[in-house]
Length: 546
Image (cartoon, rainbow, N blue to C red; front, side, top):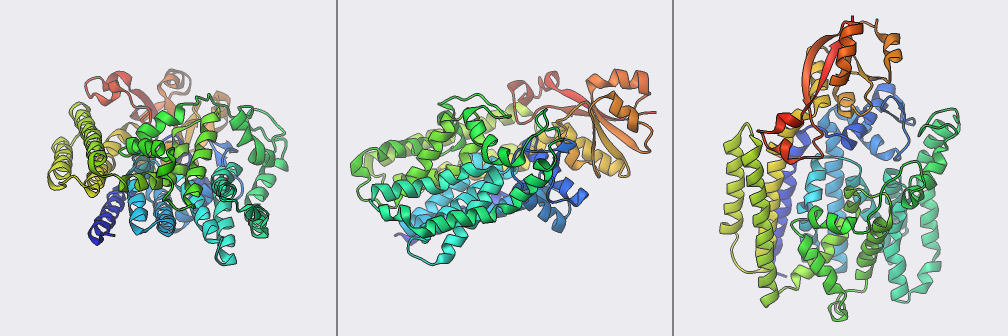
């Protein structure tokens, strides 16, 4: 082990962590992040930790833990985007520590460090640091569970308890399906290594029992909010069981596409999603997977490697066969991807190393060129500062990180990822968030009209307005709802342009402020080009009715 190499990797890991800090001070993005933040806000406003409310109604989709964590931080730090993002950042670092520990225990410290570095510098991890949802929590809890169950093979009973606890936390983030990436690797490992007795070992059944004990708060919350109230309208029908949804519809219902929430499956979806989501490491990862199919490349690896490969492979296959697919689902197995890639990179030498170094240089150059193209067309306010960052990143990557060694490949990839993170967190995301009208309207209201009673008319996706506006936001689903509250003092309504003529004509609406809107998580060329941006912008308004 070369101490100089490990010191470099530790330094780059620290740099990547520090480069992520500006993301904590940015806004919360729609749709999912702002929805989850607004629901966590409602927990504090209503002082109700067991009933979840979103869009002004009872909410049944994901379990409670994401919202409990955010609400707990709101309780300590106040309701803000910083308080919403901080726990995800901290739990993400905890997850990195866990799979560094596992890779170190199975292989060595260098593999652990390279794996951590790859994970932190992957594109979808970088974007998820800003656009906080539930997946970072899920990834951490899943891998923490895998680590403790791995240690439980030859260690104390407390690793069983810890593994069960983290597995339960993962379930309380996403649902019962997360037990597949937790246990699939172990079961296949035991079968391949002929450790059949492990399948009957009582401690694993104790672990399963403990998991169900630890998820009882969720079961209680769902039962009291939905099963005890069959009259509630959920998914446009009554008689919905929260427990049935939790154990079946939210998981198997999505997989078989016969639940209340449906999708359209594509078996190749996560193959091409990984190609961009795991940049700049995706080509190396695919090469590593192909490499593992050759028996001679597996012979000198620790038998416990099967836990890593099998967990990733089974989960990836289930995701691919599912009819409900979203890009951020793949994050849960990024730790396994990172370890697989780290093992492959360390074996590169000679012609293979030179080939992959050339490929990686091309990938990194394309990333920097793409950032330059965005800079050229977007029209940043601090245009020269943005250009300086891109050029400085390029010069540092290709001039100061020299050589034809493994650490050159890793160092250059990390340097470009740091440049990308700073570009996104300091310049790009703040610039496009100006067109997230709900956030802008909520902040305007908080600053100029803090005593307002905010409401939304005929629009259920005002998640960022719900979060940023002062107090509870009322959802008015039609004009009959508006008629019931129109005489309230300080009523201020957030409306789309389509509602404005009727509000002016029949309610004598007074426009307080106008806001430009674009769906910023679905970027288009016309939006990114400053010259054509106005063609695709919509408008929302804050109005008072008289």
